[in-house]
Length: 192
Length: 359
Image (tube, rainbow over all chains, first blue to last red; front, side, top):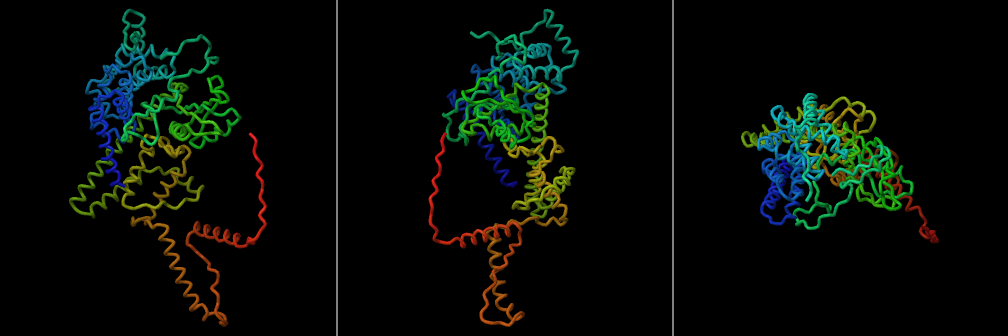
């Protein structure tokens, strides 16, 4: 079994490597989307997380967040949502400075992208990153989300506000919202 | 993203139809090496999309709710269910909402039931996380985080362990490796839950162990203490519960684990617990033994007992396969053969005309 396991492991590593290579080499947008979705789904399984980390797929996903193609953004954000559950990947994302890239996704037109972003932000909270993630601007955004028509977004935002911030923080953000300190985080740009 | 607001109170609101309820187009342009076993669409699954709530569409409207829920219960305890009458359904079909107790059950149910035929209809099963309460969502996320944490830690440990054993193997030969294997074995025994041991033990006759090799048992056990989920975090056995081992001990998985641990405790020498012998070999060995016995009985059985008159027919063999299940099988086969033999050969064959069913 141990033998089988390790050979399975190296097979899997090679397969994932092939995927990453194809993603980098191909010019076809469609193939890129498929491979990206594959990689993001592989990130769901803890067995692959270690390999994906070695292949620097974390960076690959983060790169996708600034793409024009909404599918790229959605799949990359989904992959990050899956990866960030792992503490080591979480630290990696924080090191690369992923918070601001992910925060930008809060204003995506796509619900799935926004949901992944909220969950990822919650996953990224550590004692040292807490201050950045519970920035008043993000808090205000979560408060708007908590009034959303979508139950999934509403629930996630409620959890963010209840579990990740102090009551004082929420109260302060509320005050700011009433006053002139409104921020635009999480408000999608109008479609053209 | 947000659905249009109709200012009706909540209970009168028609359930929303979300994009993730739709079956997406299957992707057909994948190169061979990226093709899975099943045709799938291009979609990314995250914990946000999964849920213990599933919606089942395409249930024929012929009053089969009980059957549907029974089918669902095969994959785990169903906590709640109700028809979603207001949900737009295809003609002559119904839509149901099912809440499983555990996400893993929902996952198994979705995997097994989606696109399967059911009383002449084809089911479409999808997660409906929008029915979750805040608490449901919170627990779901916590469970997932905890699971990943444990799993990645275990994988890292396993890897380390493997490298260690490899090193030691290279350094000092087999003796050292065996030692490490046994120590790992000890640790894993301690990790196993013990409280449900008696209950499941007394309830069910334990099945004999599946054939296995001893060498990797330590590693396997170690692996087993952690996740029982498979590659995509799915439990094939939906009853098994990795999160709360106390609740309703799932006997198939747990008891075999416990059986194993018990067995290990009983054998302090740690001799190979079960040696794998293929069934065919077992049967051959038995056959040979029986042949030998037969010869013996023909030779010396006669001298002992009665006066010997003429050649004696060998008694119908009293077969003992030394295994209850094998004995039962033998008896069943023998009875069937007897029945077949006793049927008179010539029997006027009357053809029964099958009444044609009308639909």
